[in-house]
Amino acid sequence: MRIAVPKEIYPDEQRVALVPSEIVKLIKAGHQVLVEAGAGTAASYTDEEYQQAGAGTALSPDALYVNAEVVFKVRPPQDDEIKRLGRGATLICFLETLREPAIAKKLAERGVTAVALEMVPRISRAQSMDALSSQASAAGYKAMLIGAEAIRKYFPMLTTAAGTIRPARAFVLGAGVAGLQAIATAKRLGAVVEAFDIRAATRGEVESLGAKFIEIDLGEAGEAEGGYAKEISDAAKKHEHEVIKDVLAHCDVVVTTAAVPGKKAPLLITADMVAAMKSGSVIVDMAVEQGGNVAGSQAGKKVTANGVTIIGPINLPSLMAIHTSQLFARNVVTLFTHLSPDGQLQLDFTDEITAGAVITHAGEVVNEKIIELLT
Ligand code: NAD
Image (cartoon, rainbow, N blue to C red; front, side):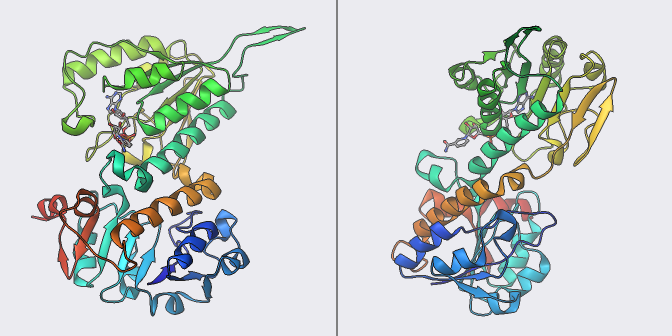
C-alpha cells in the first residue's frame, strides 16, 4: 500500500509517526512509503536517513497526500489535514475521539477509515500496539527528571568530607504506566520513594520497584470493570487528602499522574496541602493538561506557592522525541500489520483490537463507544 507520513503541524510537536528502521520493514513487506520533507527533523531523523531506508520524500503536503492510501500521524488531524485525506484512505494516529467525538463525524463524512491509537484495548495481545503506554512511560521518566532538576538538592545519599547528604524523598501519586516509570526513575537516581494509587493492584507493582506503598483505607474499591480507576466518593477523597497531606509534609519532590478514563483529573493536592509542604519542595503535575491534580498548577508554566514550586509540563513525550518516535513507530506499524495481515486492509470487526480501535469505515462511525457519545 502507499503509506504517507506528514510533518506534524501541532505547535511544538517534535515527534514523527515513523522512523527509518520501521520503514525498512514496511518496504520489505511490499509497501511504498512517502515522508514529507523535514517530517523527522525535530526528532533528529533526517530526510537522507528516510531515503536510505527506502522512503520517498514529498516536498509539500499536497504531494504527500495526493496518492496516499494510508496515513500514519501522531496528533489528531486538523481540518486542513482532514481535507487532504482522499476518500477511502486509512488514517492511524491518536484521534482523541473520546474527548472530541465530533472528529469522528468529519472523518466518516470524508470517507476515511480512521484508527485511533488511544482506543486500542489494553489487553496482553495488543501490548506492542499500545502507544498510550509507550508515550506515558517516557512522560513519567521525564517528569521525574524535571522534578530532580528543579529541587536544588541531590537525589542520592552522599557521604562527603563536608558532611552527609540525606537522600531526597520522592512521592508519586497515581501508579499507572507513567507513575511506575517515575518511581523507577527516582529509585535509579537514589531517592527514597513512596507512592499511592486507588487501584489495589498497583501495590505489588510499586513494591516490586523498591518503593513504599502508602496505606490508605478508602473504604471502597478504586477500580471499575476491566481494572481501570473509577471516580471515588467524596468521603474517600477526603480521607485520601488527609493521609496524603502528612506524606507531602516530608517530601522533596512529588510527581502526580492521577487520571480517571473519560473524566477530568481528580484534584488531589489542595492549596492548604501545598502550604503545609516544606519550602523548596517541587511538585510536577503530569495531569495538568487533563485539568490538574494540584491546586494552582498551570499548563506549560512553573509557579511558586509558599516556597513550593509547582510545574505543569505539557506534551512530555515530545521532549523525548527521538525515543518516543521510535516506540510510537513500532506501535503504529504493529497495529497496521495486524489490520492488514496480507498487505491490504482487511477489517475483521469480530476481532477485539479492530472493533476497539477502528472509529470510522465506509462513510460511517462504526465504533460503539463513539456512536454512544454522539447520540
Ligand atoms: P491513567 O493515566 O488513566 O491514570 C493514572 C493512574 O492514576 C491510574 O493508575 C489510576 O488508578 C490513578 N488514579 C486515579 N484516581 C486516583 C486517585 N484519586 N488517587 C490516586 N491515584 C489515582 O492510567 P494508565 O497508566 O493509562 O493505566 C490505566 C490502566 O490500564 C491500568 O489498569 C493499567 O494496569 C492498565 N494497562 C494495561 C495494559 C495491558 O495489559 N496491556 C497496558 C497499560 C495499562
